[in-house]
Length: 122
Image (cartoon, rainbow, N blue to C red; front, side, top):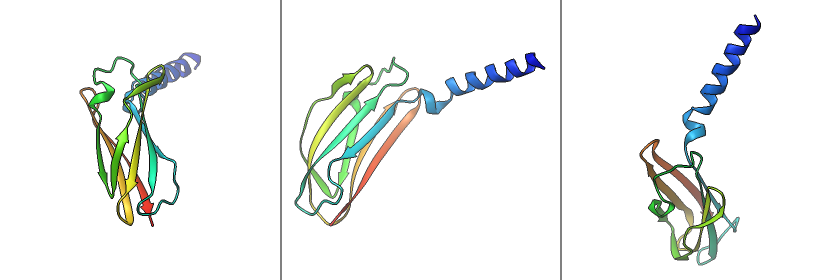
């Protein structure tokens, strides 16, 4: 019985360690404003977190698409701690409704990754 429990525990651990969710890089998007209005200038922060640490795709290969907002300027990617990179965008909301800020990365190991932030603009 003890041997069977140990085998199940080891198999479960291996499955968790090698599952796609744990080995794919993570993307995070955040905004400073909760309820922006047309014409407001906001700061959107993007983080790229390398989970598998030997990523062959540089942060600069990340693509950005917007709808309902205009990118005024942005910083370069900067490491903020081990395997975590951050980039900040100053944006202006150009129309009421839903504005969208989307990140896209194409990984040779895990395929296309998309992350989107939808913002309600008044």
